[in-house]
Image 1 (tube, rainbow, N blue to C red):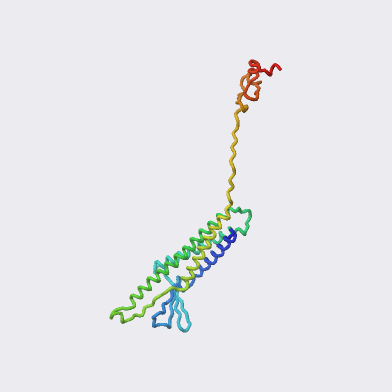
Image 2 (cartoon, rainbow, N blue to C red):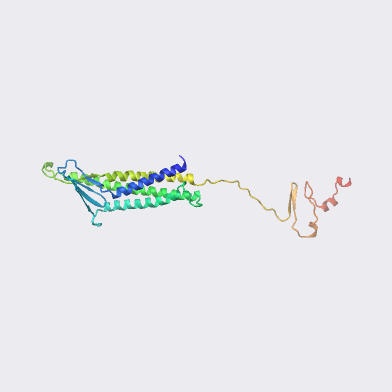
Length: 261
């Protein structure tokens, strides 16, 4: 899969996941009344994060918001906070990822900047999905605990022959929407993080060549070298011959056989 396709698919999955998180947070059916072995069927109760509702058999529905904050269970407040944090992080990462798309060119933005923005938005999408999944899982665990505690308290004395009417709640539709939405957001963030590697420019390695500056007036020959510093009159008119470093004075004091030709 190409980098652009991977980035766009991750972006679309993250959008769907974020929309699902928003929908799940606003839904009222986080917990619904368990109708199994319930003698009262004319009233159906369900609760959400923000209000509780009652639906009668006639079709009339009445919802009552939670008018208190401190009076709510601590787990419910924690679930609220997790869902809100996940939505805020998802919205911010959505804005960042729009400018990081490779198919959208804004000014003279380099690919390295787009790669960093894609990685940032991907990490934020992952955190957003984890917040949503954690919040829904915490609420589901609270429901399971209350369900089994209510089941244990339904039968009282006389060997369990007397049954008390007690409302039990089970999983609502919002829990499944939240799990799916959190998973989509998480997968989209992972795909954007993977696409970041394809957007980053490849580093080109060049062979290093070092240049060393020679000394002042240094002549390099196969047979040796003579260095003149520029001081003294005896070194001004020196000549370098092949096969070794020989001056004009050395040639006059030690003539060779070619000098007589």
